[in-house]
Length: 206
Image (cartoon, rainbow, N blue to C red; front, side):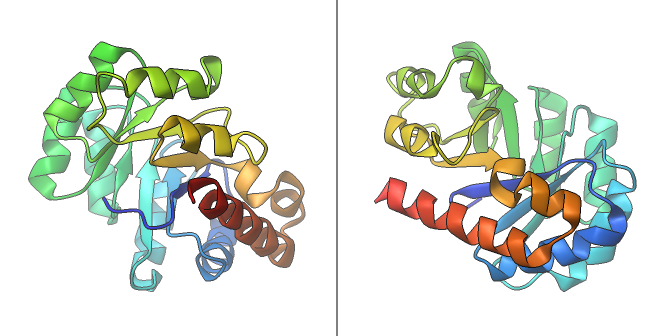
């Protein structure tokens, strides 16, 4: 899973009727990948309804894939990638069989290595905010070939620290889209927030 733009936008609890507008505004503002969490009401329908309207080069996936049953729902809905909060080898194997990239949640060194060895496209260090950017740097000491995604506690003010520590990407929600923009359903403000966040990411990686 190649992310030229090192951000995965996470949408949890979003209204199904609002998702298409958010997706369009975000992609137009430079976001490459958006995940809708499985525990969002109507998540499979959101994916299946918008899948054919995803622009070339963009990715629409499903997150919070906790078990094999949910992975099958995600694939059937048309998810272009999957993200899990936990390490489940059966889910990774299924994703590989289906040819769907999966970003696998892990925290300990053993979990990080196991996720990568099993075939995860990237490893999601979660919840990253508990241990901070220094933990990413420490993991990359022995695991310098494993692409790590920082998720949990990442925001506009600290994301540069995660990239400096070696993260290949970050997963963010309200810090990317803006709490008020989401609450007010203001797509103009949301688009501006996304563009600003992504610009900061590219600056941090430079």
